[in-house]
Length: 103
Image 1: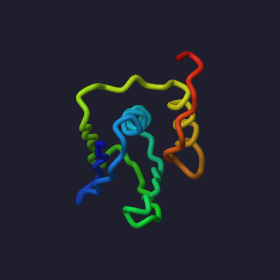
Image 2: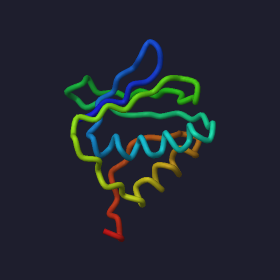
Image 3: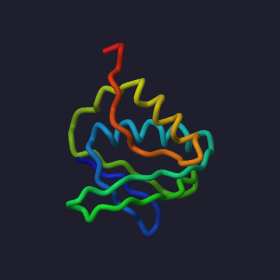
Image 4: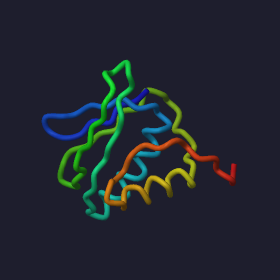
């Protein structure tokens, strides 16, 4: 499990390293282009349920902390879906990983 850390004061959200690697790829590519968008996630029952949304902006500090030492192989199909969501009115949110036909 890794952490997405955002803002000052910071918000720290725990994600599986594989999920975090895909979210990072999407967020970094959008921030590099100067794009702002919303990012939403759901909490597990163990964390109290519910969901949160934040506004991602290129001037707000962000950090990705991974627990594992290996960089996950990225699923291009999943990244494309996450990018499509990030460009929608609802914004980026974590959805289940689709099968990558190239794998």
